[in-house]
Image (cartoon, rainbow, N blue to C red; front, top):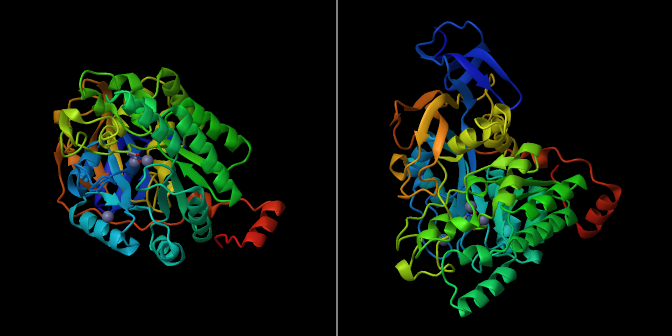
Length: 488
Ligand code: DUC
Ligand code: ZN
Ligand code: ZN
Ligand code: ZN
């Protein structure tokens, strides 16, 4: 046979349509999609299964040292294994700069860790904490040209935050080089002020985290981020959107023509601020930033995913163990201000959306594919290889059994976190077989590949940068006056 692998008799879904066909794979690439293909050297019968593009998780923290010096519980082995078991075949974690770090050193060290351990493919975003002259004029353009075509910046956290002037400087470079700016949009001073008043009054429990991170801190900063990006005429991506007001800000800005894109995550669909209202420090298991809100915001996130206001569904996997090494640096005495921020979600991201979204009729299977894979490939410059079941694409596939029921326990997961905020959730549908570049990664609930077999994928220019509309005359004149460069 001229195929290394065939996947036959499955029901294939892409972001645009669903159809029945067989898939022929050679050298890790899809070379034919048709009915009635003859069996390859290896043949998988996908009867009764839904064949979907492998998930792309474009927001996860792996082997990352937080600003407070806390190490993530997952390294590039456990993180990528966990991702694969949940139907994800590509991740884009962060190479995270701390203010004293040189950017090339940061990229080199994350690259080495991933190269030795990853079992699925990966790229990187840069977290930029120190946009000094060397970073802006030299290192940033350099890493963008090397395939790190997106960067995350923060409007809050004392050790990471950039002021508006710095954000404009970064955005101008990103616009000139063709990189996408991802924003952590929360108003630092609002959060600081509320937290100070709470702590003064002895309100230290995890549930006060959500009080400090008020929805207005999120919506105000989001509005400001969009305005800054509009000023310098570059697209911007708001990550981890939680609150209804923020979604309204984004929807209105898009309606007025702003190039703003947005992401949300499982915790904003399925968790609420009230989940963190538990005795002692137990509520810390449900704390991330921005925090989960209420039922009304959950509903707004569903609507945003459905109508395209929120085009990306990522995990924001931020894996901290529920002990002194992670969530609770001071044990039971840890205040909400000292807890590590973040929840795990790399493995359950797709199964949760499949079960709650597709199986419950809130999303079509095509919308599911767009939100979990295709849109990530386009947004982050991977569409030449990933995000669709198409001739010429990498054979990154997940075979889903829509009839399989799974009750979530922390013990069944492959991350190193030790708990899940979704404990006890009952899921319908599970990715039973997962392929990365035609290699079977997961089958029979077992990992089938060795550490270090994932590949680094240099990314092309993100689609929002590649396909920018021509500037208005007014913007063109402004750009000339202030010396703004645009990607050629
Ligand atoms: N931002 C993230 O992107 N992840 C975890 C916590 C945070 O503040
Ligand atoms: Zn560092
Ligand atoms: Zn963030
Ligand atoms: Zn994050």
